[in-house]
Amino acid sequence: MSVFRETTITWKGKTHKFTPSMKLLRAIERGDGNGTVSIIELIHGANSGRPQLSFMAWIVTLVLLHAGAESADEEEVYGEMLGFDEEAFALYRAVIDAISPSSSKKTEVPAESP
Image 1 (spheres, rainbow, N blue to C red):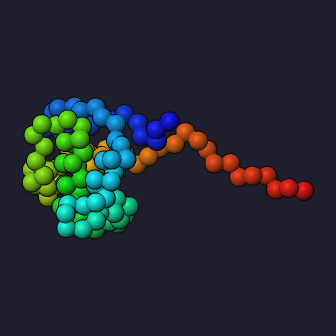
Image 2: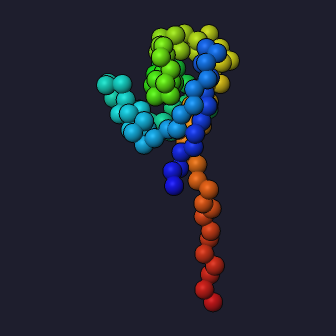
Image 3: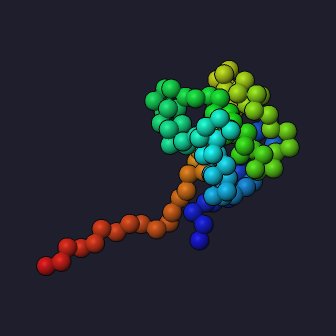
């Protein structure tokens, strides 16, 4: 059973269906060639008002290409984010949701022994 689920993302009016993979996550966390990227740190930074837009744009572009987008351009995504484009930030949230594994298993706390 995979922890990832099929996801639909939309960019520039085109919809792409894909399922994230561990290979995609490793590619993201290996970084852009100049250092590693922590997805958790990016999420925390974005949630605390300190987004790293260049890495956010890079991740969105990488995921768009993984999803089959033919003309995903990192600079265009970055430019849209700089302009606080609603579609760009909605896509970023969708990408983060997609690459965050979900599990249908619930962790049960074992009952104490008498």
